[in-house]
Image (tube, rainbow, N blue to C red; front, side, top):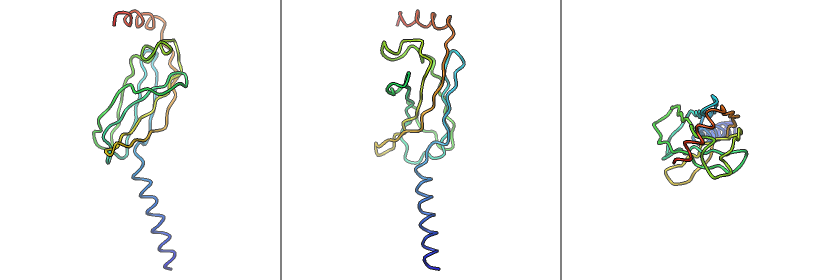
Length: 139
């Protein structure tokens, strides 16, 4: 009987530790042909100091595109990436349509972890692409 009780308590403790380490319930990215919208929902924001959204183009390296301050859980965060095909180095200024996004979760002790990444196909309208490139020349 005592062993069963210890096993149950141990199992419960592991589940609690796992639940404490889970921060993001879901992450999603969608394209409307102009912008990409990234949304993620938190289930725990204890000890979080900052969220950073990162983008990867055509399976390349992830780069930070914005930071978000935690608001308290549960919260759904939304970020609209209006310049997916214009940002980054020259190799990223393409008509690439394969983007990946993830959230870097920075804790108060300056350690960090990452959410799962999501992929989105982004087919930019030709007129918008031309106008966006013209605007980029004058920045």
